[in-house]
Length: 350
Image (cartoon, rainbow, N blue to C red; front, side):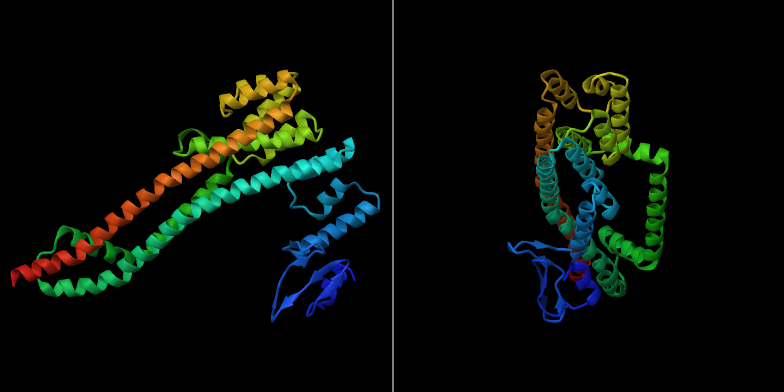
């Protein structure tokens, strides 16, 4: 029974043998995974269906890259073009090993950054939720009690009560303004002027511009190394890299480098006139070109930039954590003072 036939039949209430694959079910909740003979798993059964289609087309005489491209449209262009180059050069196995190393490194770097940022993000989100509940639910209850005292309230208490009243009565206006700002930002981001403005800000004026530049440089070097090692022409590699860059200005810079290479200039010479490339990246590309080991040099410098980006992220978060704690402590002290100072004033007047 094939995977396609299994899905069409709906017979998945028990363990089913599918060309050496096993699908299982726990209780009433279907577990969406395929168990391989060696014990490993694939988390999405659709992947198996797509791979079966690819295998059928390859068996019918189509190229593997073409089969991947037609049956799995979401695959990165880097993957498809590297596979195509491996087929043409007869080094498909080596290309898959390079792709594994490239995507494994990218996934580990991304997972490390996400893992590092989880704690501060959760703390900030929790603090915002708790503050909103206090301002909308708890403070109005104290407001009526303080109003019955008939005494002058401290400035911090009056500020807290006014803020709570504003949030309670005008919360819809705040949400409306936030929605308008979000829509305006997304609309502006789609325009050419918006893409340039946002990308320029991220590269040159944003507080984390160095971190952003490190990430882009590591992405550029690692992708270039992987695809050049597969035997793709430099012009083709630069064209693909310009399409997958996370920054529009950086992407335009890569396109300028491609135009320079097409006119007969070297990669490093073409990069020198583009401001978005770090000096170290340009110099290392020049070294790789002169020594004839551009792929290895790009691989090393890509690892360096990725390591620097991860290290910088850890340092920033190490600084952010005590800052977040101090800010939360100040807010907590202000809330306590706003609530207890009127009580102390009332007790003192008795």
